[in-house]
Amino acid sequence: MLPQHFSAFATITQLFNVVTTMPDLQERAVYLSSTDNGWQETCYRDFRQTTISFAGGLHALGIRRGDTVGIAAENSVRWMQADFAIVALGGIDVPVFPTLTAEQERYIFDHSECRAVVVSNQFQLSKVQSIEERLPKLEFIIVLQPGDYATKNVSVLSFDAVVEQGAQTTEEWFVEECNKAAEDDVVTIIYTSGTTGIPKGVMLTNKNLVSNVKSATDRFEITRADTMLSYLPLCHSLERIGAGYTAFATLATVAFAKSIDHIASGMLEVRPTLMTSVPRLFERIYARVHNNIVKESPAKQRIFSWAVKTGMRCVELEHAGRRVPIHLTIQRNIADKLVFEKIRARTGGKLRAFISGGAALPREIGLFFYAIGIDILEGYGLTETAPVLAGIRWDQPCIGTVGPALKDVTLRIAADGEILAKGPNVMKGYFKDEQATAEAIDEEGWFHTGDIGMFDERGNLKITDRKKHIFVSSGGKNIAPQPIENTILQSKFIEQVVLIGEKRDYCSALIVPDFDILKEWAAKQGLQAENSELVLLEQLQKTVYKDVQTLLKDFSKYEKVRRLTLLDEPFTVENGMMTPTLKIKRKVVEERFADIIDEMYK
Image 1 (cartoon, helix red, strand yellow):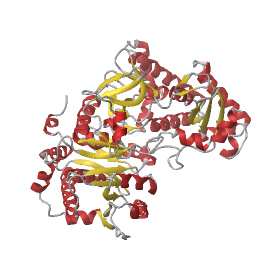
Image 2 (tube, rainbow, N blue to C red):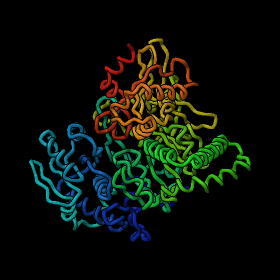
Image 3 (cartoon, one colour):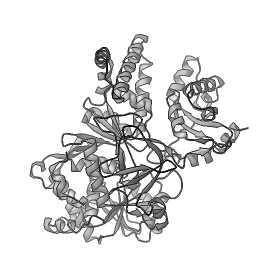
Image 4 (tube, rainbow, N blue to C red):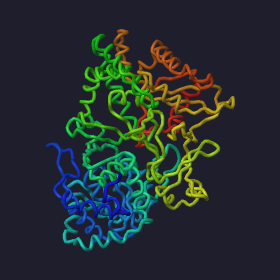
């Protein structure tokens, strides 16, 4: 059941006003910020007042209804205040990943015609200043971090200065501005990171976002008792709707981690009950746990292995809707005391679930987390759907699926296997791109996701691959790389993989090893070498190849990997081979390693 106050808002501005004026919340912490002196609280009263003043300051600077304002900043309380203030004026914010290059930002801010850009610090400011002469609509830049900043051609102001400029803004004026918002007004334009091609600006309205907040709350059961640790960028559609608007609507407290490197310490300090995440984090935790276990005594390794297998057997029975025998229940309770409690303690001990999205969760990793007592509620969606379309129910988990469609969302499978979606959360369209909009949303209003999937007997959606990722071998076989890659990633030696096979005689693979495991393997062989030397060792190559063949034993002959190459360079956002949402850019990788790929087919 949705909270009673949910009926009182239909726009993001109404959401802000309803929540921040609740009498019992005024002194309560809405956000926690990680500082050198610990976690700093921001209460609802102060959050509202600063947001109102910032909105007044923006209005004094000339921001009006329909104007676009960019945001290039890391997660913070001020990010959320800037967002709510821009929207309160009827403005449209254009958030970007702070990891983007200046040239990538230039395209987005120019295409979206931004009149202003909000940045976090001097580094982000320098990027915008390096391109400001090629942003004809840009009038001023606002820096969230306190300080004195030099102006180049475009005026530069601090967040505090803008707040001070709007300090006399009245409640009445602010509420009046907020009430002008309509459900179909565009709130934000989010540019798809995309693994290929030029980014497209997804226009999301009040109706899109609010409908998804209410549906996500219904499905994932977030409440005011929850504390969420946020590390995904707020410009990411999953984090924007999860730790951004949904947490705010449900009165949950959100703690902003400094970065992904501070998640482990943040969990221990904040003791979150929920977290939104992408599978990459689970893969890291899974690898770290197993890497630590191999350093323990043989007896402890046997206990760990027994405990995990016991937990997984129980999970598989439960997810199949079958009863767990009493002897297995007893064994799981013993395993929990001996092993699982200690692992959960490293997450703070209160974590009841992760909400996962952005990419497919490998089955083995999902089973492991459920086995140790941490649920992963996998969801599915796209930026164009604001973003969630489906999600696993608490009471009906089913690993390998993303659960049934959310309330008010309709899904169906097209004749070619593509997933089609319809609902109030489907975007208004792509900004200044009617052709792309018409290609994405057909005449009947169905949004074409570009994903291939199917429904199981219980109505749960299963994603099998991206439509554009499916390739055809020279023998005419259709090959979906994602299931093959997820299986290969179960190898302890492998960190990342890209399957190759388009118009080829057979499948090959580019593999980034787990270099920590490699060094341990080398030490046992009495070897000391750099990464670039390790990947060339014939003995290691044979070991990894054998592991891959064992994992792929149940796949068809044409789906198996016949040749592979170990790379000494990981795929990262920094080297341009991953998107900011940690998806591998297949096209970029294939171009970067074209010579190596050709060599595997000689």
